[in-house]
Length: 284
Ligand SMILES: C[S@@+](CC[C@H](N)C(=O)[O-])C[C@H]1O[C@@H](n2cnc3c(N)ncnc32)[C@H](O)[C@@H]1O
Image (cartoon, rainbow, N blue to C red; front, top):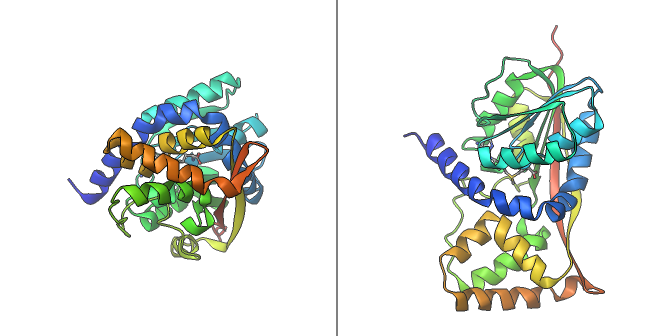
């Protein structure tokens, strides 16, 4: 089995295992990421009759929002995990969205013809691909000349207290293995210019990147802890392997770390994402 297949298999298993938590906390997760999806949709300038492809859609966004905004568009959601896409389909059905279809597919080998789509979004996907540069070439292949690709990744942990408050508390109690710099992880594409370089190497032009602020809002510190430890893969995996007392000590440390982010009982923890957009040169 090649490295790419091994990485895809472990990613599929990890995300499928998290899918019920993503569905349970859908309102909190969707609200947190909405400004990033809105910035991507704005940069893509999606026409009302677009053929739009959303990659690593997970539970559906931003592709589902594109389908809602443009009832005349055809939107295809893809992801490695059938369980995540099943949640996306339920979210679409609940909103009466009919112009959307889901396809299980890895970003490195898409089951679509060349130039099949006018616009493509990839929100928080690039960092999990076995070969993010190779996947960008594959995305450019299925993009029409003149079409636009937009990706979003997380800026480094110091700018994302929404995860680092919990992860610092967990790391104080549990020895976490250092992330493999060449393997999938949440902050693997945090370096400024890194994803832009993939875009440029894939032949895209007018490439630019900019940062977008987000905020994770929960109704209590307990809810914060539940949301993070159930849907963030690193936190969920680390806590699965330890006893109840260790989990409780990590939780108590996280509660202390949240103090600066509580106003009137509401917990608002900031974060920062980076969007990258590029255009496939028109032919001729
Ligand atoms: C953080 S979630 C992002 C979901 C959604 N786009 C969002 O922004 O809320 C990452 C998704 O990437 C998917 N994924 C991981 N590796 C992938 C690959 N090689 N090809 C396609 N999807 C992949 C996972 O299954 C997961 O659903």
